[in-house]
Every structure is written in C-alpha cells, then in structure tokens.
Length: 125
Image 1 (cartoon, rainbow, N blue to C red):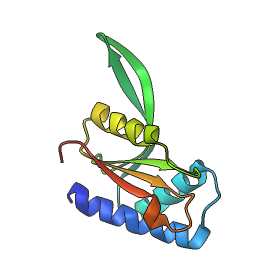
Image 2 (cartoon, rainbow, N blue to C red):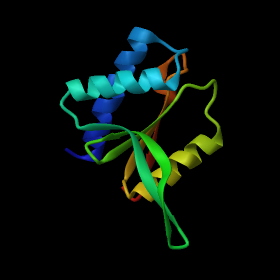
Image 3 (cartoon, rainbow, N blue to C red):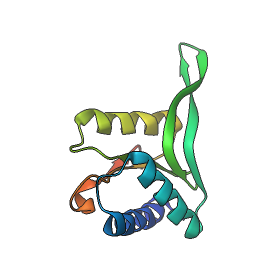
C-alpha cells in the first residue's frame, strides 16, 4: 500500500472520529482514538515513537517523538489548537526529514470542520 493510499484511510478514520466526538479534547485523546481505529482497519500503528537525533556526530537517544507512525510509511502529527501556527508545519516537516519518511499528515482536531484541519506535508514524495 502506498503512502497516498494509507493517508486516504487515515483521513477517513480521522473524519469519523471528529464526526463522533467533535473538537475540544486533548491531543492524547485523539491520538488514542485514531491509533485504535487504524489498528482496527489492519494497519501497523506505533504511538509516541522515540526518534534519535544526531547532531555534529553525537547521537541523542530521543531527539523527538512522532505522535503516530502508520505502516512505517506515514507520520501523523496531532494537534488540538485554536489555530495552527507556521511552526507546526515546520515542526512536522523537520520530523519528516529526520525520520526519512516521505509523507506526513498534520491533523488539528480542534476545528469545526475537520477537513480544514488536515494538511499533507511531503518530503520528496
């Protein structure tokens, strides 16, 4: 399954969660719900994936954590904020580059219509 096919299913699951729950919860609640639903769909999902960070040849065991990683192909950064700031996009792109993955979804569940809160970020896809 390609990154685009996986992302289509992820977005569908996120839309269903938002339709049933709505905005206003903590990011961790949406992360747990999305991870559960994606596993139910048969995806391999990792939560709070610690990623090493190498700076000037020195490896730090945990440089950052990826909220969700699906099938080792798609990174998901979950937010629950009033408005996404430019730094949220930059942060997600940095995570994407450091992980070596090609596609990330930045999903802000704190929106009236989730479609407005879903953003694809690519890295050489």
